[in-house]
Amino acid sequence: MAGVALSGGLDSTIISHMLRDRRLPAIAVISRDFMATDLTYCQAAAAAAGMRLRVAMPNTAELLEGVSETVRILGCFGESTIRNALVMYVAVSEAKRMGIASLATGDGADELFAGYGFLVRADPAALRTELDRLRGIMRFSSSAIGESLGVRIESPFIYPDVVRVASSLPPGQLVGERGGARVGKLILRRLFDGEIPQVIVRRPKSPMQDGAGTVGLKGLLESLITDEMFAERAGEILGRDGIRIRTKESLHYYEQYLRHFGPPEPARGGLACPDCRCALRPNLRSCRMCGAFPV
Image (cartoon, rainbow, N blue to C red; front, side):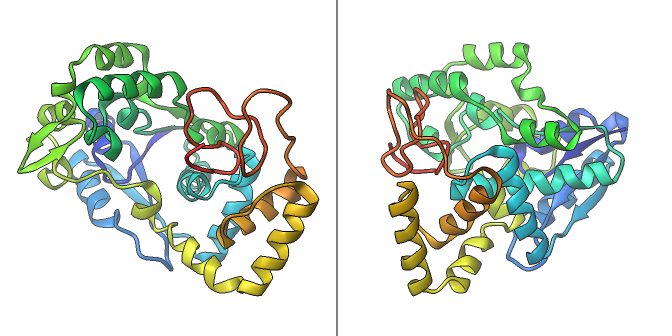
């Protein structure tokens, strides 16, 4: 059995629309204890596609358990990376419980069709340069999570034919004015206007952590770890491992990383992150290991 990871954003809604004749189950993730913004949108998307919607609603304890597993699977501890990937960990875990063997995602649409805010703000020349850079470095946590949990991940936006078409489009078909605002993924919004719910055609880009509510972990960990505890632990880690811990949230994620792997190996030549000393991948502007930005 196959399914769709459905946030109610433009990308996953397009996938659900394209698969509507198969009547697949859809999985959404909404935190039980934190504010989330996806619920109304994913309900509208599922209803429009005639899909049965399963809403996974993890509580705080389940999210924290998921954090540890997400850190283990991805082998990193950057705050934003873990918060966003945690959503996919919950979705894939739910798919596995439901007996779903493959899960379709909207991965790649933002990178190929200019969905991110910094792309929307770029001038045409810079936009093409940035899209070329993103196309060369894009990688998605869903693939590693699916492999770890035994669920195949299908991401139609990164199929070779789609990548080829997206790469040939001029900037004016990717970013432009619509409804009085400058938006990205312009061609997708135009193509599916009238095909998917209008509220989703108009919906701005929303990170997974906001839509599912995992962004609430940031405030939770800030409240649970005292300033004195943070200063003491961060100082120990800096002296022992050479890792600069920036936030209380980062401290928690790093401690989970230590449980699974021990201190990360520093770079041996080449570019190194100033915060964690790990090797930096070419053309990345943030550290994959600790999330430092910019580097």
